[in-house]
Image (cartoon, rainbow, N blue to C red; front, side, top):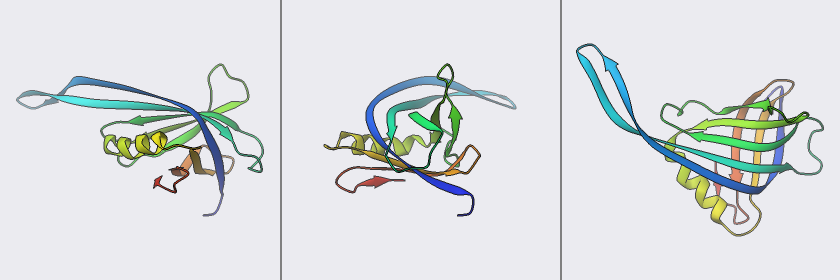
Length: 136
C-alpha cells in the first residue's frame, strides 16, 4: 500500500472499562429506548526496536461501540504528553471478546498497525499473542 508504514509495538499493560446505558432513538411518532453497551480497552504500548523513527506511541485506546463497524482509527498526539502519540480506534462491540482473549494469553502480546506516512489515518490494526492467535 503506497504511503503507508508498518509500526510494531509490545503491549506492556492493559485496562478495560465498560458501561451500559439507555439511548433514545427519536423518530416521527415518538421515541424508543434501547440498552447500549460500550467498552473501552486501554493498552499501554512500547515501540519495538528497529521500527520507523519518530512519533513515539505509548497508548492505544480502543472504543468498542455501536456504529463502529466501518471505523478503524487515527494516530494522534497525546494531550499533555509532549512528543508522545496514541492510537485512537473504534471497533464493533462484537470484536471485544477476541481482543480480550488474546490479552489473557500468557507471554508478550504484540500490536502492529499500518499508518499513513506523514498523516494520521490507521489502515490496519492487529493484536497477536505468542501462540499466533490474532485479531484484525
